[in-house]
Amino acid sequence: MFTGIVEELGVVDGIEEQTDAIRLTVRGPLVTTDAHLGDSISVNGCCLTVAERDGETFTADVMRETLDKTSLGALEVGARVNLERAVTAHSRLGGHIVQGHVDGTGTLLARTPSEHWEVVEISLPTTLARYLVAKGSITVDGISLTVVEVGDTSFTVSLIPETLARTTLGQKLAGDTVNLEVDVIAKYVERLLEHRTPTPAGDDA
Image 1: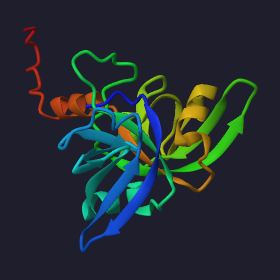
Image 2 (image 1 turned 180 degrees about the vertical axis):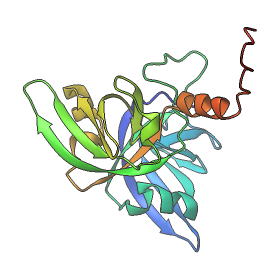
Image 3 (image 1 turned 120 degrees about the horizontal axis):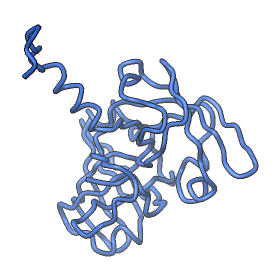
Image 4 (image 1 turned 135 degrees about the vertical axis):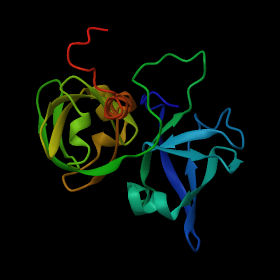
């Protein structure tokens, strides 16, 4: 589990093409300081398992399913990526509960700068729109953000200077693809309501 608070901007150090997967090597001096084989690290919001570690780099196997359904398939050597280690029982939950399971991808539609922040509009798959509410949480490329406005096909977030400086959203351009993960609590609530047994009329119990 993660919190959506990016610890470090890493760099893709190598990509080894395989038949139905890739071996992705990422340089991240901070997240590798205590990394062990089998540990989870979020890369642009995708939970990946450390398969190898060599100094300041770690390598993970990325399956075809992940490449097809996230933006990781478009990564190139030298690309910057958002990195976060899995939380521990002693970690602060600075963002919100993030699983690292991407629900879909969106496209950055527009950036509107202002004096102290920047409003970014991102397209939203219609199947995910029902999980978003104004002032609720969403994960964009592994970053925990607060929704400002939400429509049927897009939503907006406000980015403070810290987010712009410390994450890849400071460099994204209109047309770029981002990974989206909606708040898992909303999905659980929906599932529970689907199986709720209706209370018979007149029954106050």
